[in-house]
Length: 490
Figure 1 (cartoon, helix red, strand yellow):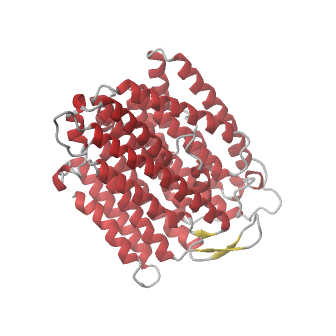
Figure 2 (cartoon, rainbow, N blue to C red; figure 1 turned 120 degrees about the vertical axis):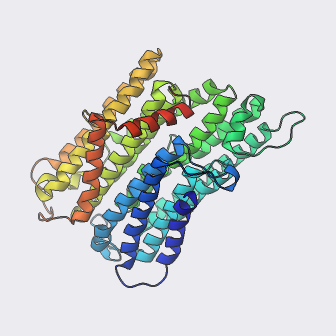
Figure 3 (cartoon, rainbow, N blue to C red; figure 1 turned 180 degrees about the vertical axis):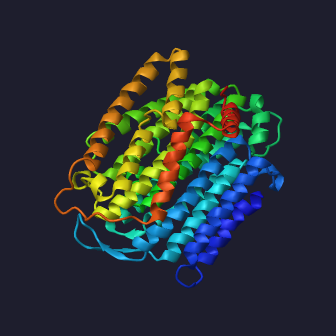
C-alpha cells in the first residue's frame, strides 16, 4: 500500500504531460486525489507493512501528516475544477500594475501537482533520514513551477527566493544528516543505518556533541522550509504570489512536512537524553516566529501576505507546543490539524476574492458580503477559526498549549504568547472586518455566483474545524495521543 501511495501520483504526473483532450487532466486530478484519499483511509483501518528494509513505513506521526496531505489534496483537486475553468490557461489584466499576465499551461500545473503530492507522501512514510532529506528536497523542486504559475515578475522573484533560501536550508539539513551519521559511530562500533528505529534504539550510545550539532543543523535547515523565523523570508512571497490553490497546499501540507522532519530529529535527541536541549531550541524559534508574525500582520496591506504571516505565527505555535512537551505536544499535534484545515479554507476563499476583485490589496476589497455573500461568510468563518475563537478547534488546541505552559510554570512564555496572539488578532480583525463589512467601494465587481466546486472545499474544511471544536472523533484522538507520545508527550 505504501508503494501505491507513492507511485500513483508520480505515474499520474507523467501521464499529465501527455497530450490529452481538454478536460481529461482535470478528471485525472480528481481521480488521483480520490484514490489517494481512499488508500490513506485504508491505512487507518490497517497500518501497512514496512517496505525496503524498514526505510519506508508508517507510524502515528506519519499517518497524521499523510492524512492531512491527502485530505487537502483532494480538496484542492475539487477546487481546481472551477479554478482552472475561471483562471487556468487564460491571460488576465493585473489590476495593480495594468498589464496582461499569462498563466502556465494546464499540463504543467496538474503534472507538478501530482509530483508535489508524491513527494509529500514520501516525506510522511520516510523512516530513513537520507530518504527524508531527498523527499523534502523533491517537494521544493515539484512546487517551484506551481509558484510560478502566473507568469509575472513578482511570481518569478518569489520562485527564485523560494528556491534559493530553501536550497540553503536543505543543504544545512544534509550537513545535519552527516553529523548524526558521525554521532552514530561510537568507539569500536561500526556505522549503523540512519533509520529512525535504529538511531532511537542506539540513543544512549550516540556521541552527544555530534548529535547536538546535527540537531541544530536539521532544525535550521528544515525550520527554513517550515517557515520558522528568522528563516521564513521566502514564505510571504511564495504564498502571496502562488495561485490560491497552491498557497493552500504550501501552508496546509508542505509546512507540516518540514515540521515532521524536525520532529524526527527530536525523537533521536530524546532517546539520547537531550530532550531538554532540543525542546528549548524549539521554544526559542517558536517565540521568535510569533513575535515576527505579530509585527508584520499589524498594518499588512496584502490579504494573501497576511495569511502567509499567519502561517509563520502558527508554525511558531507548533514549535512551542513540541518544545514544551507533555500535554502541549498533544496540543501541537491537534493544532497542526486545525491550522492546516483552516488555513487551506482561507486560501481557497482568497482565490475567490482575487478572481472577483483582481487585486490582493486589502484597501481595495470592500463589501465582500454584498458582492459574494457565500464567500464573505466563509471569509469571516475562516477568520474566527484561524484566530482561535471558540467554538472552533483552533481554540481548543491553542488553549491546550497555553494551559500546559502555565502548568509547567512557564509563565513568561505563556504571557508572551498571549500578548503576541492578541496583537495578531487585532491586525487580522482590522483587515477581515474591513473587507467584508460596508458597501462595495468604487470599481467593485458586480455581485455574481462562484462555481460550487470552488465553494464546497472551503465550506467543508471550515465545518470540520468547527466540528473539532465541539467533538473530536475517538480514532483521531487516539492518533493524536500516539503522535504526541512519539515526541515526548503524554
